[in-house]
Image (cartoon, rainbow over all chains, first blue to last red):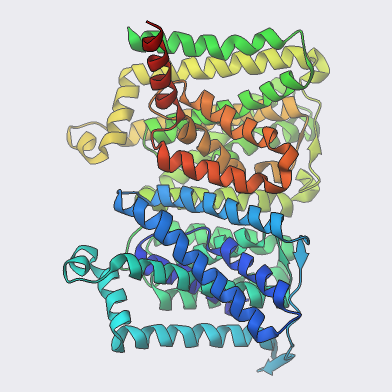
Length: 274
Length: 309
């Protein structure tokens, strides 16, 4: 579970870490991409995934460029972004209902079976999702160290005014971060859709889960997000096993609320505060 | 004087639906529903917009009032009115505990904690489905069994007006002025020697109680409640009421409630596209009319009056 959760969490962390905007529509946009992938799956699997991911990147880019950055420049606060991104989520959930005829889909990707380790057996797909998240995280970190683009991300997240002064196109940086976050959420939705199934409303679950797990890790802190995704994934699995499926999310949300009360900056802390 | 005129006209507008009492039917049913949400909208107007408390647990306090009434009445045999008031009294316990627990945190963290509680609560209701009915819900005849549907409709309208008057009066008192000060600048209010903790506690208590009682009235009016009715989107719709209507003017929440409840009703023929339209209209109102509908409606009315003169 933690492996799949880690992708939308990473998406939230990337967007919040760079833009400082809490984007609650990310899950719905990701699931929209999952449905797009499903639509093209019968043609070619690789192409279908690529189309879904690219569509999500473009949506994330446009939403940031047209809506969120201008509101941010007008001085919008976190609460306003929370509300606006929920409304954006409504639009994309509505588009899903309008475009796709089926309310419930399953992405039939080739399965790789279960992997047994130390007496535990884990679905191979979940391991791949986790490895993918770790790989993405390492790539992001390497980009931050060695590429101009990565350095401009870092500069923008650390000091926006200074970044603007030294000529970094912060608007572009924000748009790319948002596109990247939505693309990661899409990959998370694809993994989710192949293991379980995707419903029209799955995006909210994925987005809210992604967001709260990111908050527990220390929102904007991508390592914290990854560790939190693993812990929360285990908590969900164990509580589901011990108490039944209905209690799974109750326990998860109780823990998150407690973490927020005890350590508002998350388990690893956050450079940005909400 | 102008302010006085706005208050009286708002109360007058709120009383208008009493004219539908004899007509009954769909219009009456929807109006009652709009008013039940307007009660919650005024709670959000008071607590979030006027007192500056970042609370998003309106669906939770409302649900405590609703479920508490059913549980106490049906399972423990309490009289309906007693069950309603006791469960309403329990609702502020949750809002105050949340306030106390997040006292060290700032702004958006408090919002997030209460928002998470709003996500958690319907899941808890599902998990406790043996008592609460979960998604299948619980039916409740409540007050309607004794007084019938029409008198209950009148009670809903009158109670909404009473709630509006209570908040209106409260905001004009010293307490209301201090709450406005807190919402403007919490630290400064504290610095001038005012015990802000006491006033915030009071705001959470009043808001929780009125929201809880509104929830108790809701379940009597609708005769049914399930976890779907108190999903996290309910809290968002409640919050949208003063936000869309405009929190600066007292009649703002009325426009907001009409917008939030009636737009979905009007969009029923295009149900498939409902969320797209709702989301888009919402974004447009927030971006183009950041003050909400009420100040713009007021400007428009003034312009029409000027043109006539």
